[in-house]
Image 1 (cartoon, rainbow, N blue to C red):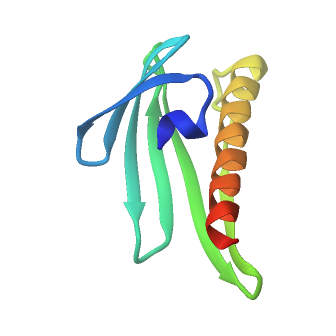
Image 2: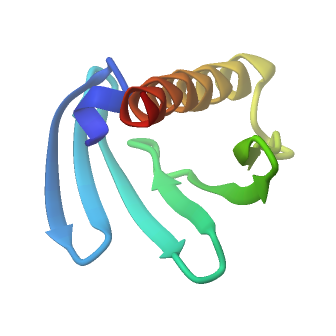
Length: 107
C-alpha cells in the first residue's frame, strides 16, 4: 500500500508486524504502525534517514456522511520550517492518495 500512497517511495518492505522499510530518494525511512482498529487509531512513527523520529497522530471519526480522518502534525523545536513543510507535504500526499483509494471503494 505504501508505494501507492507516496510517490517518493520506490520500494516498501515489511520487516516485522506493523513495521516497514521504505526506500525513498532521501534514503531508507522506517515506519512503525500503531494501528488500533477498535479505537480507530492510525498512528505511526516515522524514522527519517537523519534519525529524527516523528509521531504522526491519525484518528478516524465516524460521522453522518461517512468517516472523517484527522491528522496532527507538529513542528519540532529544532526542526526547520523547510523540513516541517517537506514532512507536511508528504502527509498531505498520503492522505490525498488514501482518500482516492477510499472513494473508489465507495462507488
